[in-house]
Image (cartoon, rainbow, N blue to C red; front, side, top):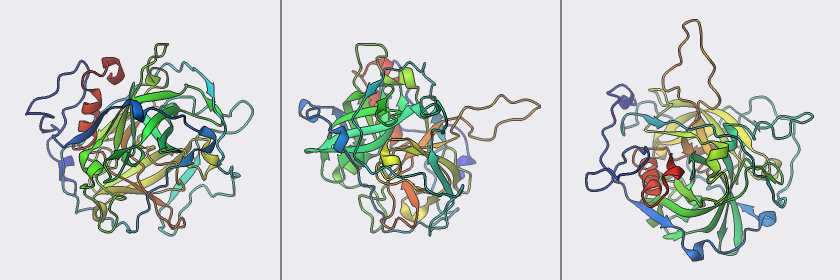
Length: 392
């Protein structure tokens, strides 16, 4: 049982370096001293043109391991914590991009709640509704517009993942969309397109000038599930820093807003269950050109280095998309009604990491956000000389 949810609510975290917190002009929670690898994007990493039309989805890492739910076998890391997000002003700076060559599928005949051979129920649908004038009215609005597509280069190939903003100018995605596990090799040329809908990039295209992953992922020493090295791991999480523009908005989050993020079991019950809201751009659904939403109960799999597991229809291209708790805008309460525990809205607690090579199973998983990964990653990205505006 997650005893840290029953103990004191004060996080007792080590400082990032030499017992001292890195001084910044913005609020970044103190991080544990786990090593982070990355830094500014070098000139050779930012060269090459993204071929949007022929970008292929980053293959979703495939797990050969079946998850085991155990409500009592999860060692505590620390008390759950969170940082809230912001809504943004909604100012658009539209750009039109070439259509991708992914196959467009029909709506199909899908029941309101599906499940695969895992018997794990879920609902996966477009974020946007249908009807006259309704095309992308939902994905243009917060909280959905803080999610987008992430393009990058792997040699000559253009690859696509999903990603989201957790600060005004800080992106979170999967480490396997940023670096090649255990090869000490970064990919290059990242571009972030928030709330893409068909050919429209309503909030523009944003370059990246910094990238960070956990050192254990970079050098291949990460803790991974038996038989699933490099796939089901503890630290498949990365952050990217956006290159500011000289025009307004300087950073994408000013317009789109950004999510909060939580760690060490935020949003999970004491028996390790949570309701996940997954957002992403899987290429097998609407050709990857429309944002998709999955709602499913997630559980912590103790035999999978405590990865979160949920039911989903999403596929390749969804890698790195946010897995949130409490998605949406909270209502105004009356009559003495109170919110439940850990009710902060729009909190990312993981990013989509892996699935199964047998598509009939219909489950996905994610490395959990911990005080030992997301906090040092954000702290590294927000350390000087990063402009304070990017991280407030």
